[in-house]
Length: 71
Image (tube, rainbow, N blue to C red):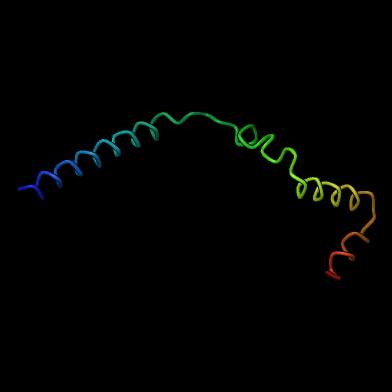
């Protein structure tokens, strides 16, 4: 009988989780993905490096890409 009780408890937990998911799907919160990630790369050296490469390429200095090919 202990197994049945455990199974019943597990099924109740699954049903509760499904109900919660159905509520979330029915009433989605409108979130702007950009607002969610804004600032997530703050003080990240690799991101600053990517930005520097982008600026160099936009200015026409594609030599930064050639130096990366040599690595």
